Length: 457
Image (cartoon, rainbow, N blue to C red; front, top):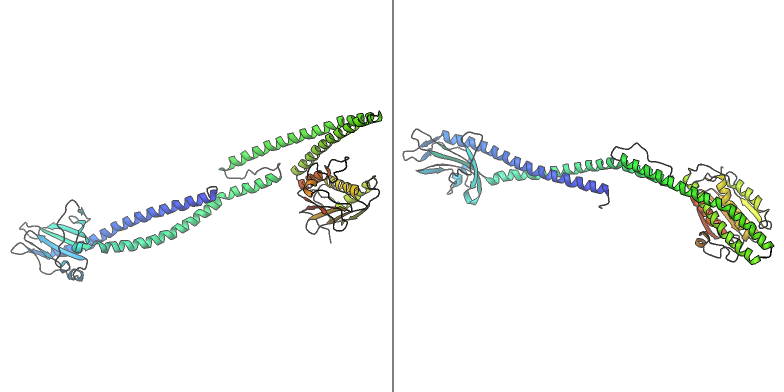
C-alpha cells in the first residue's frame, strides 16, 4: 500500500476532506447554537416586554400583573417556558413553575443581548434542568423599587433543535465528502496520466534502445524524462562501444587463427600428428569463442535495430538446400521443402538464411535419408526442420545452451549452431523449440514468430 502513489494521494485526499468536513460540522454547529440562542433571546424579549408593560407594585411592594400573558406554555406546569418577577418583598411566578423558582441574578455569568439592558445566561432551573434565562431589573413606578424580570426556556428545547440540525448537517456533509472524494479520485487519475504515458514510452524504450521519451510532458516531470533520456543515451553509447570492441576483437583473431591452422597443417605434414591434433583442438576452441562473440554481436545488432524487413522462407530454404545437397554430408540426403511461396517472415533475408542454413546443415549431418522443411502461417509464422536421424541424445535445454552438443561422440563441432540460432531467433522476437519428429523419428526444430504475413489465398 505504501508503494502506491495513487493510493497515497487518495488516502491523503480522503483524510484531508474528512478533517475539513469535521471542522466544518463542529463550526457550523457552534454557529447554529449561537443563532438559536439569539432567536430564543429575541422571542423571550417579546414576552418580557409584555410583562413589563403590565407590571405594577402592590401596596406591600410585591410585584403585581393585572393581565398576565395568555400564552398556554406559561400556564402549563413544567412546560419548559417560565417567567418570574422578583422584589425584596416577594415574587410572582408563572403557573408553569408550579412550586419551583428561577435562580437569582448571577452578574458574572450573564451577557448582554442585542436588546439594550437585557441579559442572558444558562443556569440551573426547575426539576434540576438547565434553563436559558433572559433577565433585567426594571422600575415600574417612581418609587424607585426594582423588580427583577426573568423569562426562561429549558435548554432541552434549544438542544433538540441543535441536535436535529447536527444530524441533518452530518448527512449532508457525508454526501459532500463522497462527492469531493470522487473529485479527488478524478484529479489523481488525471494527475497521474502523464506518468502512465511515461511508463508506456519506457516499455518502447526497453524494446528499442534507440528510442527516447517524448518531450511533450508537464513541466513537473520534464526533468525526470530528460534524466531518463540522458541515461538511455549513455547506456546506448556504452553498449555500442562494448559490442564494437567485442566484434573488432573477434574479427582481429580470425587472421591469427588462420595462421595457426596453417602451422597445424605443416606440423601434420611433417609427421607431428599428436602436436597437430592438440593445436587443432586449441584452434577449434578459439574459433568457437570467436564465432560466439560474432553471433552475439549480430544478435545484439538485430535487437537494437527497428526490424521492418520481410523475407521469403520458401525461397531461402530452396537456396540453402541447393548449397547443402552439394556438400559431402548432404549428398546422400533427400530434402523436402513444403513452404508456401506467398508466406513471409518478419526477419531480414540474411538473418533467416543464417538460421535455416545452420538448421538444415545440422539436420543433413545427422539424418539417415530424409530432411523435411515445412512452414505454416495460420497463427503467425511457424517453420519446422526435421530429420529421420536418432533424435536428441540430451535434453532440449542442454542442446540450446552455448557449447551444448547433439552428438557427444564427435569432435568436429562445438555445439554452437543451435545456440547461435536461438540467439538470432530470440533477437527477432521469435521462439525455438526442440523435440522428436512424429513422422520421421529424428530431431524436430520448430521456429515461431508471433507476427507474420500469412499466405495469400
